[in-house]
Image 1 (tube, one colour):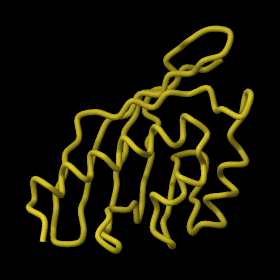
Image 2 (cartoon, one colour):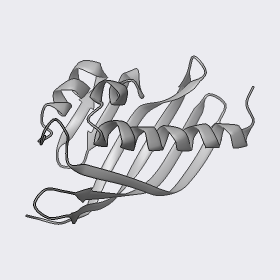
Image 3 (tube, rainbow, N blue to C red):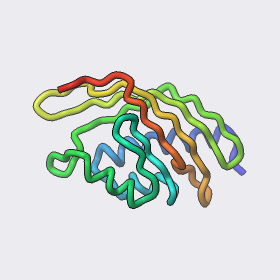
Image 4 (tube, one colour):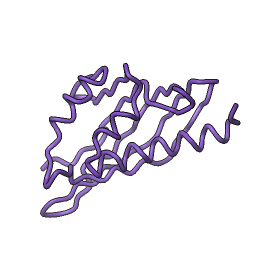
Length: 135
């Protein structure tokens, strides 16, 4: 059984994988970070439960040459581990690209995680888009 420190390190890795998979357009890798019944809820955009709905969410992302032209930066993680479950709160900044680079979103994530076959996965991720730059 991993220690709490090892769990927290694995969870921080999961948070980083989320950013790298999404931002690089590796949406299948992104999907695998969720449990089979995982939920992604974006305040003001909807709640997407299960792999089929998560895939449907991905079709709403504008792409340029197959990439979303975004960089997610997650920081200030507060992680509480309880056996095979964990709760995480963190800040997120989303930088958008294209004709000019701009800060698009400053917000927060509230995550409920589960350990599945030894790996941490998102059971539920809520994104709160607290501050948004309107085009």
